[in-house]
Image 1 (tube, one colour):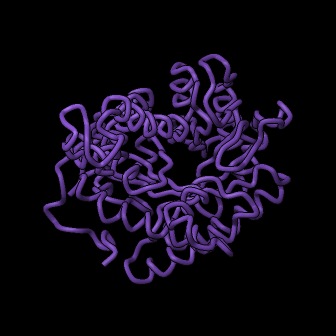
Image 2 (cartoon, helix red, strand yellow):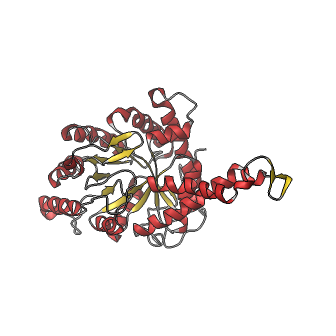
Image 3 (tube, helix red, strand yellow):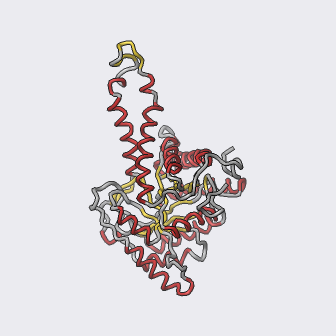
Length: 382
């Protein structure tokens, strides 16, 4: 099964290798970016899949190291990142099990991995290599290596090593160049020098020149004033033209080998909360194919629970007794499924706005639940 509007290689479920690359290239060529949503539970994953289905579009589902540990359970030891590895693998199997049923293509990704967290990605890479040996594709579609706080030469050399290993099993590398400000998942860059929030075209070209001979399966999270967290509109000073200047600079370096659209680099947008939609869409025009979403969906999930409690407050004060009678049971109100569904519905509504802002609606050409062909190779964990 494939989609009328997408390359034939792109199918329902988790996409890896050439299918993933075809999807990313389709986004760049057609002027949209794919929402990349951080998840910490199966409930959050299902909300992402539901939103993608409603918007007839692909989605990227991703996990941070902290989110992965939470998925595995905070009650177990995370020594040597064992819980974070197991949690991410468990989440990956959930996505693989459900994504085809929802009938949408999914890129399965992990988010920021600083130098100290490399053992976490090493564990996930080993899991993907084992999965590849059995199923012919990696467990994950891609991983991010974030060495933006390290010297650029070290950043590039380590990324080269990982890309060499990734490319053998059809997995994509996302690397970060320049620092995303603000704070996320325990990484605090609120006080970094201003100049570190803006990448230079020459630096982006260094990355492109170093990685391209290894594989074309990489993206660059370049800094153009991005800040993690939520801020009032107008408080985030983005400079999307930095990306455009980099594309022009690299295209000139490539000469006749530059692509026809003069966009040799696929960029990733981090820290977009509070950004003007005009800035977001300008960045897409310069080759952004993925935008990370976390802060806004965190609030949306909580707000769904908050609103549910406000609406049903008097039915949530005990197991028995409510305004309808002192002996009336309240089980249908405190059943966790009810408030969690309210959280999911709120998250889907917020994601609908994200899909629209990223011009990522009606991309597939119509989705049908499930696949008439049954699960693809590797589609299910069993």
